[in-house]
Length: 249
Image 1: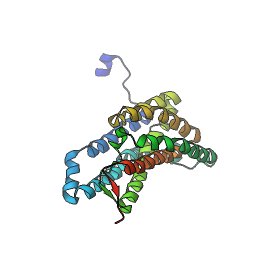
Image 2: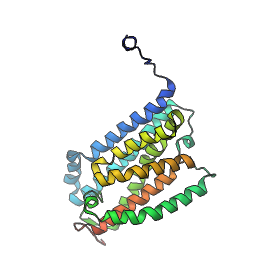
Image 3: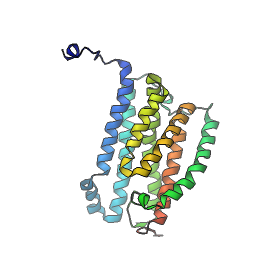
Image 4: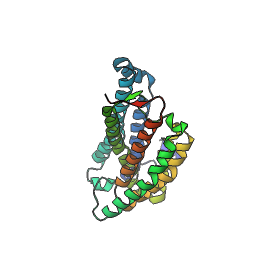
């Protein structure tokens, strides 16, 4: 047998799955989302069917629905099936009344800090190259509201994976800082395609959000801060993108 030749313990223990499942299944979900979002052939189908503006809108919204499902829902289902005694609160999805005041204070405090920073960076060329993700030239109220709503759906799955499923089980099995190291590395890697500035900026933010998630035993600070960042960035980039305009129709 191979394990005898290698002289290593190759037994897969049940506790090992608490680390393997979040990492592997989450990675597969991220790949499904990423390769769909970056598929020009798939995007072109939307553009051909709905036109350039509406096609861009529907394509991005579709990928956000897909991302929320593939990154958040599917890994959760697989984890619950594997460990049926798991409570959602153990994965950060509960409402911890003891830490609720701290959750509110940290969310408000961090929002006050990140909003002006995001507004400042959102106007820069490197950011306008990627945001807003919907590249429609004309935006009406329906598109703006749909853009904000689908960010919420996507980020709920996204933050549940990174600050929930990929954090709490790993903390219990390998410790706080090793779990945060794994989390930060994967989180930063997903931002590398968006440029050096954005990728580097995710490192300190990811560490802070992981620590606050563990402290409050929930994902909600990370979730609401990420929404604040995405909404602020998207609306500011829309306002300063010379190729886009808001129309009333």
